[in-house]
Amino acid sequence: MLCFACNKTNSDNPEDENNNNNNEIGSGQPGVVGTAGVTTWDLLADAEKNRIKGWNTLFLHQSVGQDLEEGCKANGFAWEYYGNGDKVNKGLMGGIFVDVGNIANGNPYEKIRVFKEQILNSKEEVKIGVFKFGYADIDDENYSQVETAYKKMVEELKSGINGFRMVHVTPPLVFSVEPYDGNGARMKVGQWMKTTFAGNDVIFDLQALESNDGACQINGVWHICAENRNSASDPSDVNGVDTSPGQGHIGKKAGQRIAKALLMSMYNSGK
Image 1 (cartoon, one colour):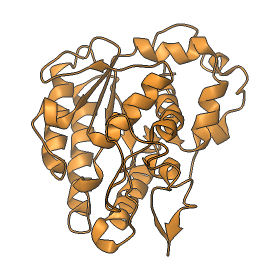
Image 2: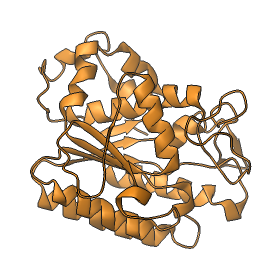
Image 3: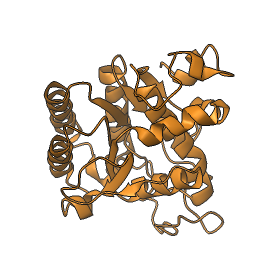
């Protein structure tokens, strides 16, 4: 697995790598950003970090994505609220599918449709798209069809918008490893994303961060670690405390740490 952070050759002065010392978007660096992306973000100069605020980016998601948005905000990178039909013209803009398209979790094809529509509505403004599935969107019955629909969306956006970059997010995990709770299928989609897109795009490996690189697993099936999951000692600002092993929301402190790798993913997309 290719890891950006592992491949950095000048982490003490990374802004020199692409000769970009301003907010202009660069050629980017494709590959996978995993757990090492947290430290790499910490080592990045503030001037380089702040460049991403000037790159018009749309992040559409649902509840776990709200945990990540809160984590970004805690690191000083708040997302401007994005509503249905808004223009992606205010830097970092984030929205939830239930607001943008009245789409609940468990309907991945409608999420794909709405994301494509919203991006194309801002084709003159948008630079980066970040799409995150919900854990309820993927299971053993549909994962292959979801992959096909998602790939078609990405291809259409890239062919329709000159210079458009996509940050792919491996689907979030839940605490349970029971087959009916779907982590095995989500892992398949995550690996498929890395195999299919990492040569040209950035992959934010949320699964690696949630599971501590697979340290939290049973019989090879990864799950979100207890220390990363929302709990009484580390509740989520948005989602409180999970009450079922079939859930997988992120705690506030864990979200602040994990979000650094998301920020690093966006930076690599446009550096």
